[in-house]
Structure formats: C-alpha cells, structure tokens
Figure 1 (spheres, rainbow, N blue to C red):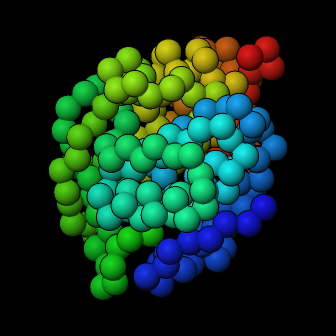
Figure 2: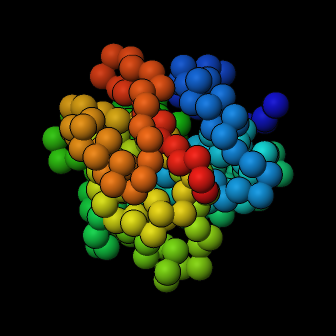
Length: 218
C-alpha cells in the first residue's frame, strides 16, 4: 500500500520516509482493520498512520491538537483520498483546556513527534488547546463509534482511556504507545482489561512500549 505526503520540513521528511521506525505499528493496524471499520487515530500528528490505514478503513477520525499538524493531516488525507475527519483538540479524561508542550527546535515543528500535555515536558514552548473526553466526542460532536483505535499521546494514554468507556466497549482493537516516564504500563493494561480486552506487548524500545489490546467477539 502506498501513500503520498505534503512535505515542507526535514522533520516531516523523516516521518514519512521511515515512519519514525513504526512500520510494525502500521502493519499491525493494517492486519486488524476491515473495510467497514471506523478508525480513530488519537495523536495523529501529520496523518501518517491515518493515510496508510485509512485507505483500508471505511472512515477515519484523525485527532490532533496542534493546529499546524492538524492542517497538514487534512492535506495529507485529502492527497490520499482518505475519508477522514480531522479534529483539532486533545482527548483526555475531562473536558476543559490544557497546555500542550511544543518541542523547542530551531526548525519548523510540523511533524515533530514529541508534543505532550505533561507539565514536566522538557525544552518546550506551549500552546493552549481544548481537551474533550472520547465519549463526549461521540455523544456531542456526532463522531462515529470506533472499531479500531490508535493512541499516541506522549504520556496522556491513561487519561484518554479513562474518558472513553463507550468507545472502548465498542472497539475491537486498541493499539497504545505507552510512555513509562509518564504513566504506569500496568495501569494501561488494567484499564484495557476492564473493558474485556486481552493485552499483549507488540514491541518495547527505548522508553516506549507498544501494546495491542484485542477482543475476539466484537
């Protein structure tokens, strides 16, 4: 499966050339997704995963709080004829506003993968963003229930899961990039298992652990 991307910065180039070394994430999701599925890509960045997996999904919901990344995700999904709705806010446990730490680089930050809502994020500028629980997105914003969920939110994983009961009860598979510096992996496992998922480690690398949670009877 091939995709095309709009690239203006070196960071974007690296992201689309080597997928940030996350080919295994894309492959796992492609193996899981069905043609009538709704994919939620939470922490979509510039839409790399949405563009690949969205070509196979029935509908894609790409959620990205940083405005410049969200705009690029819209452009990239359109470029690849992906039926995507790009939502420009963060997902969390409670509705409100939060400060998003923006990587402090000498280059354009579009495509950088370390945006975080964690207050101790290092070397960062910041921007205020809206935060909406997943269940409120479904209930109040007319967004379809997810069948497959990808979560990459740099330490906010537990908060995403806590505000997403209805979505998790419907989903068949959830792939989470866990950042142990900010969150206990066992807590992520407990939250997923409480919704009937079987949880396995897909891959562990450096300070990240990718877990895949699945339910056979959905």
